[in-house]
Length: 112
Image 1 (cartoon, helix red, strand yellow):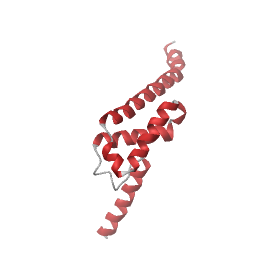
Image 2 (cartoon, one colour):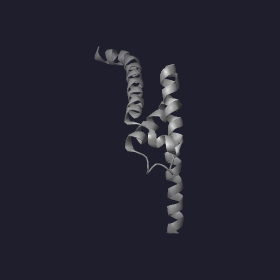
Image 3 (spheres, helix red, strand yellow):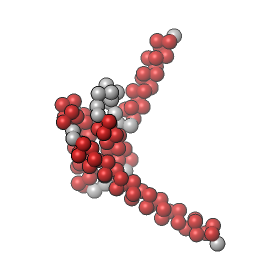
């Protein structure tokens, strides 16, 4: 019973890691910055693709391709990870600005 539960939990964990853009086989061997940048790149490419410029889109797809290969993943530098993180910050600022514009009429209506 316990072995089956562990097997089922491992499968659920692998599914969750795949959903956020990580490979469960290489998750424990990759550097922390690469893992963080990989999840950010996956989220940006799947959920916020319309907000990306062509150069940002090219950088993120190149990063995801590099993360897909073991040899290239080991060669990813911190500078490339920071580039992906900066793109993520830029898109988050755009999203917060859009959110603020949507909520601004509601705030002024409640103050009156």
